[in-house]
Image (tube, rainbow, N blue to C red):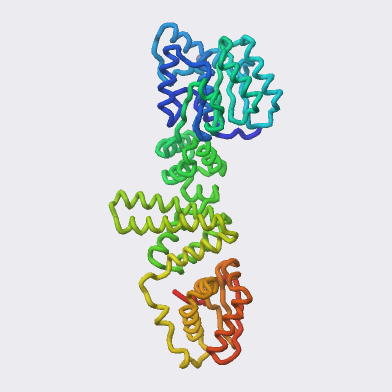
Length: 461
Ligand SMILES: [Zn+2]
């Protein structure tokens, strides 16, 4: 049996189940009770906010025997009674020829759309009201839009149109002005999270609060996305789903790694930053999406500190966010976003009020030995003296580690090929010349990718 997506099985079936859109369900319930439903609705909102579900609920309600009986008796109905879901009409509407639903974005030809719409002038075969649900209505051809316009200007008896769109601005004004407009809000995280936990319980799965929160935030107001993300985690068959399970299944940067990056910048700890960056890059995600995740995490942290009224921490986070926003813009226009991201973070994590570089400057003339310490000092000197000269060379050196220095061969390791690549042949020659001059003999430099074994020494801490 083909796997049915969880979202299709948990779609809201009554107005009461329409989460996060209470302003719409209340209004519609009133209109239904007073028999004042319109013959044309334009449902506007982001994907996954309940537009199609609402259209289906209304199509059912217009034909539901219990709803019609209540209307006749002027008896008020609760939102969970609309529609009843049990009467013959509710049970058969999915297969009814009078309930026509299509997506204007799919490849359906203009002829097909025209043919479907032309049946609007024919009386319904079985139902009381013939209903047309058209998704992504802004994608319809000009001819199809014209046919709809004619139909909603002079509506045939017993026909109702539900036009859904994610792009209100692309819907012709002539259609907008002839429909009753329902604006769907983004569904708040506070609604999505608890709903997911209830849903998981009904599936005998324990979804942790943190995990539910994470999915809700990721879904950004779309219940369909939220349920789909949960479905992906649910499909693993585990009986419990934790935050790290969600991160793993959905291929996300973990909050722990993002927190490590934030702490590393806060505490000016480049080694910690290096390790955290290495881990997040291993997820295979693009540096742009990692930077975006970092921005979201920073925003969350800002909210936390705002609640705690921790002004100094808040200022620091605001500055950090601002920097990441700037970096993101730069990354988007650059061919080497990875380098920009790493370098910018390394710069942010650089010690602010330390003059360690000057201390390390030393007096080179006195250097005689072959030790790694000497090389460190010479390179520090080069970094200080060339600071404004060759930024890429300096940045590459700032992120390099010394693996070994034997027989005049200095081996430097880099966390990533992109950073190592910044030390190109010209810069290598420059570095070799500088070292050779300072050490009075020929020095060769080699680059290697980050060696997992210890023994490598950071040039700068
Ligand atoms: Zn019914």
